Length: 447
Ligand SMILES: Cc1cc2nc3c(=O)[nH]c(=O)nc-3n(C[C@H](O)[C@H](O)[C@H](O)COP(=O)(O)OP(=O)(O)OC[C@H]3O[C@@H](n4cnc5c(N)ncnc54)[C@H](O)[C@@H]3O)c2cc1C
Image 1 (spheres, helix red, strand yellow):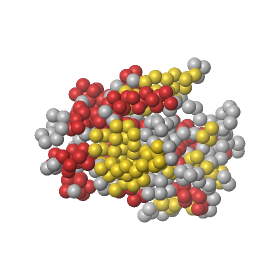
Image 2: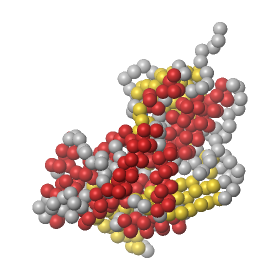
Image 3: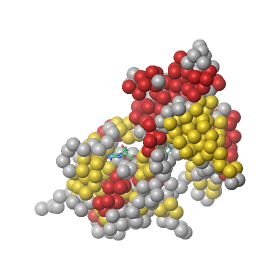
Image 4: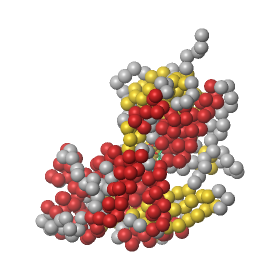
């Protein structure tokens, strides 16, 4: 009698989990994919949903449809459920509202969440951008702020509604600030009677001394110039110390002197910190995993948890290193890293099942892109043999556009995004401005 198929469970259908499932699906294993949502989300374009440039279905795809080819093979089950705990001793997952789920091998690809650096109370006033729900919430806040400003009687009353603050000048913060300026300068001017939307102030606050800190200084400088040209007020060396419903307090240093400043704003967006999913803490408690300062799980070279070769952690939740030539290097929290880890974790499980040794993870870095706004972006490519190719401005923006369309999941989504972007390019329109009457929107309008 043949032995039953081994059960491989994958938590998360983001970039890492999706790639792992695809790589496992042709093998003789029983796969279960668990995600709390019913969709795969293309996070690199999420800011476009938050700023009303694209609708949600253009940047996401139902998991069952995305994996329909793999489902046909008969060894994949997809469950929509929240994994609340991992019982490493019993090799079971605890799911909300259903029976525990057993595994022989587990891949944890639960991603990351926002970190408010010990000030979780700031979340209420400064939402971050990670999920579709976050994007809807930010969109309601941004659109609602202009509506609220139109109803104000005085300039003093109006000013905080027309001041937008983005905290954190990484790629997401830069994209958000650049796009909000574009909305104020080009999309809205003819549509309001009492306010002049071109007077909107968009402030980008950054703790370090430059924007896009992961890029080389020369591209950071280019990005800063492009942001300033678009109309963003870029303030670096600013450490945020308090956020409430009325504004942001931050400190700047001048030699030994620290100066506190207050910026009144009713719309604050948090793009400053990320922390590993809470499932990292479950692995620390139940599998003895070590977490780094950002709550990510420190993994072995083959991406498994030390002492638990049956548990792999990948993507944004893993503090992984790349074992190529020279010293091992930390893997950045980007989608190519998650995808490559997904493939390696799947291949290592299959190797183990064949009685072979697992391989160390090696990250292939193709470079880094970030858009700043219309016709403005920076590109830092790593091309084999040639080395680094760096450029900025209009051609970098075109490169960014086509790269994102290429990597977007689903043929329909690619077409829709291309049409929407072409339309927006010629008209400056942002078609996804319709906001549902949720309690949150009601509270903005009433406040
Ligand atoms: C706004 C934004 C912009 C970005 N832009 C870029 C970019 O331009 N280029 C780039 O390379 N990278 C970008 N990134 C980073 C990139 O998206 C991540 O590195 C990548 O998504 C990590 O993949 P992952 O599989 O680890 O996690 P994710 O893609 O975050 O997927 C995690 C999955 O796990 C599920 N999940 C989480 N917890 C549970 C639970 N308890 N139970 C069940 N399911 C759960 C979630 O629903 C989700 O589907 C961006 C990220 C954000 C947030």
